[in-house]
Length: 184
Picture (cartoon, one colour):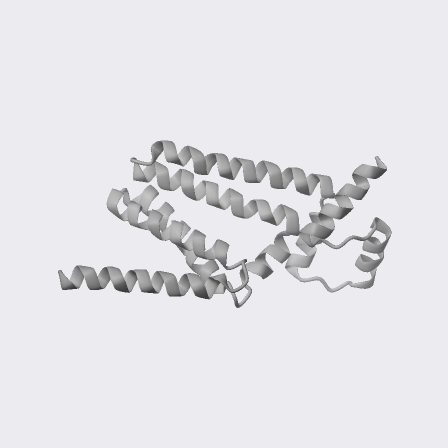
């Protein structure tokens, strides 16, 4: 059992979670009485490391399953958009189990990735709106392509110096495409 606890502590350190015992957490909670909404939410929704890892694994596996199942309905853009977007939402939510919802939101709103986050969330909303309400396959297909590009950009924003590279690459690809279309 002691080996298991040490392994969980190492995983906590790798993920970036603070490693402290329950007595220190209780003392910290008693010292600070003014909590914001997210602090209060995090305090009431504390999970053990084992529960966090299980939550991450289950949520990530469900997201990956939805994303892979969406490939089965690839030629039906409306069904594809729904399953692909649900898979993205579950995968995105899985990281909140590891680092906590407050830190997840803080990292998503970091100035380095605020645009990628906004476009990714907006593209998921647009894809679901086009699939569920508009029922236009061409518009849904466009929204899926936008969502996939936003997903790649959002994912790359977590790798240092990859966000600007991705922006330049997409800008270059788009300008080349428009030049070919306009010149021919």
